[in-house]
Length: 208
Ligand SMILES: [Zn+2]
Image 1 (cartoon, helix red, strand yellow):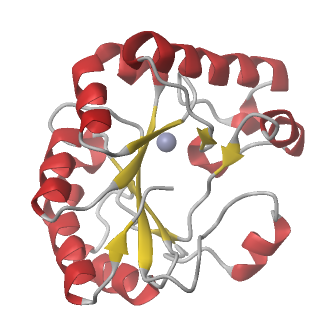
Image 2 (tube, rainbow, N blue to C red):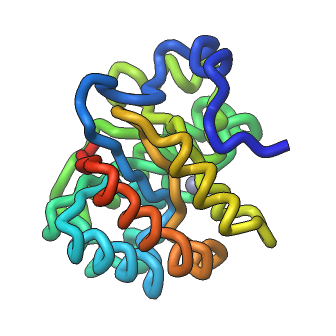
C-alpha cells in the first residue's frame, strides 16, 4: 500500500522534523531529491523557469562533484540546495558516526564546488535513527515531506499519481519528487501537468 500523503500519525510521531509549512499562505514547496543529474535536473529547471517557480534541491554529494555546473545552475536560478548525504546512505544501516561523517562530506562538497553552506538536511529514504536525528539538529533543519509523487516506483499508474498529488496538495504542502535517471520518464510526463495545476489553482511556490 502506497500513501501519497504522509499519514498524520507519522508526522505526530516525529515532531522535531518539518513535514509542512505555513497553512495560511497559498504557497507550496517543491523539493527534488538525489541530483544533480544531467537530463533530469536541467529538464526540471527549464519547467520551473517557464512558470517562474522555485524549488529546493536536496543533492547527493557525489552527484555535486560529478555535475558541478548543473549544481551551480540550480543556485544561479534562485533555487535552494540542501544536503542529502554524500553517498545516499540509509541511516538505519549506518552507524551514527559514519552517517554524520557522510553528511559533513556533502556539506564540504557544497562549500568546495559552489562556495555555499546549507542548514537544510533530508535523510535518504526518510530513514534516520533518533540518535542521528539528535546529532544533526543543532546544525541542520531536518526537512521531510507531506506529499509523495511515487515517481521512484516502477510501473506506477501516472494518471492516478497526478490525481492523487493534486488532491493532496494544500497550503504549506512540501512535495517530494526525484531528479535521478530512474524517475526521468515520470518527471517528464507528469511534472509539467502538476506545475500547470499549481498555476491554475492559484498556488505560488516557495523555497524551504
Ligand atoms: Zn534520495
